[in-house]
Length: 144
Image 1: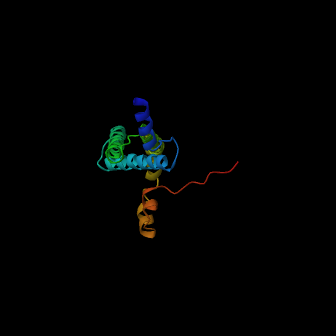
Image 2: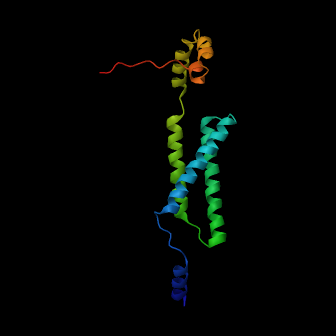
Image 3: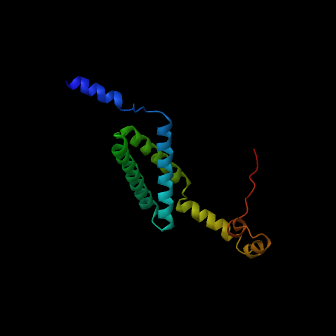
């Protein structure tokens, strides 16, 4: 009695594969959620490490809420979808970590822009582009 019932339930439930268009959607939506949550927290002046941890919490909450919605709507709660969500959030975290400047890089940049400070008012009137007003002009590096 149990075997036919289990077989009937397995035939009606859609197969949950590891790869497919749905999994890519989970990956990219989680990466997007992670980066938007992190950016919003940075705008609110939350420190980098705390903003990253909170963004993970937001992404996890959104992912689990989506799976609970799928469970109620379609009868399927996919742990594989959550794994793809975690992979997307992890990829976004790696990108965020690689693009956030460390204090050592900031001081180097501030030193370069401070050497341009006497010329900055002249550049800002000649070229209103904010890049020219705030940053030093790029230095050409000799080729080998």
